Image (cartoon, rainbow, N blue to C red; front, top):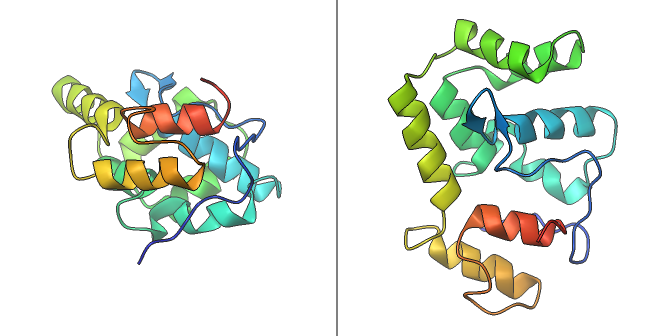
Length: 154
C-alpha cells in the first residue's frame, strides 16, 4: 500500500530536520532519524510524516536504518529523548545495543542510501514523489536529492 508522506505543500519546510546526507560519525541518515524522534516528541513533526517514522513502514529509510543497525527503535527513541547524549554518543549506544558495522559495511550502507532511487527498485517511487510536487522525472536522480529538493535545500 502506498502511503504519501506529503503533509505540507512543496517545499516541505521542517526546522530542525537535517539532510539525510548529513553524517553522524561517518554514517548517513542516522542523524535525520534522531531529528525525527525529537521533532515528533515536541509535536513539530507533521502528521503526514508519522507513518514513515521508525520501523512501522517497511522499506522506509527509518526502517532500513533500524534493520542495518539491528537496534530496537523504541529503546533508541527512549534513549534519545533522555536528552543527555550527543548524536555521536547515541550512535555509540546503538553500536553497544545493536550492531557495530565494519568500515566496509558503513561504506556500503552510505553508498546504497545516497544512491537510492537511481536506476534501482526505488526509481519508480522517486518519480511518483516528483509527480506529487509537480516536477518531471529526472529533476533529481536520487531520493536523498529529492528530500533535499522537497525540503528547500536544493
